Amino acid sequence: MSSIELTPSQQTILQELVNLYKTAETAVKGEEIAGEVDRNPGTVRNQMQSLKALQLVEGVPGPKGGYKPTAKAYDALEIQDLDQAADVPLAHNGENVETANVDQIDLTSVHHPEKCRANISLQGSLSAFSEGDTVTVGPTPLSRLEIVGKIDGKDETDNALVLTIDDMRAPVAPQTE
Image (cartoon, rainbow, N blue to C red; front, top):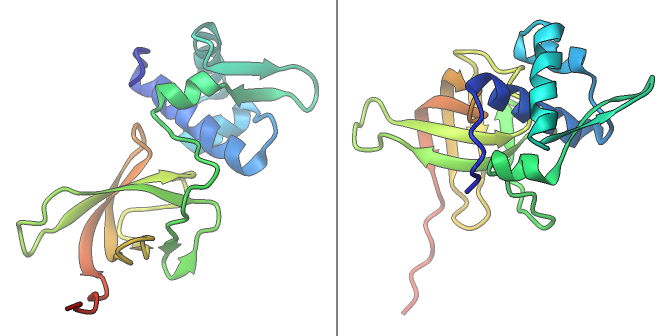
């Protein structure tokens, strides 16, 4: 667990930098981050100075410059950057999202049969997702669990989608004697 305390704004901006850097694999411009998190580019630049002072962000000068997350940024966001991580697919309104991978599934209220909810933590940007969109998560590697639901909200601080679950299924394992 990281000992760095980030403000919600810093955490959102840093998370988006990590998301954009993962797909671009090159320095990310502050304006691009600002557009994704719906903030003023000046606000993002100011926050980046604070994040650089915390050694979470590296500035890259020049015309192709921008910002890169440091290894310490992944620790601060509690992101495991596993080389051999299993892919847990995500579909958005029936289309596979190639730039996102499910990091964690937290079933928050399975005890209520009519309002089963889940928080789906992602590695990837949340910007394309809107309330009411249909999302399919999985199948997961081990249990082959698949969850289908509608987006109730987004938790940009934790880079998670809040779903109301419409269907949840996993194949039944054959009985062994």
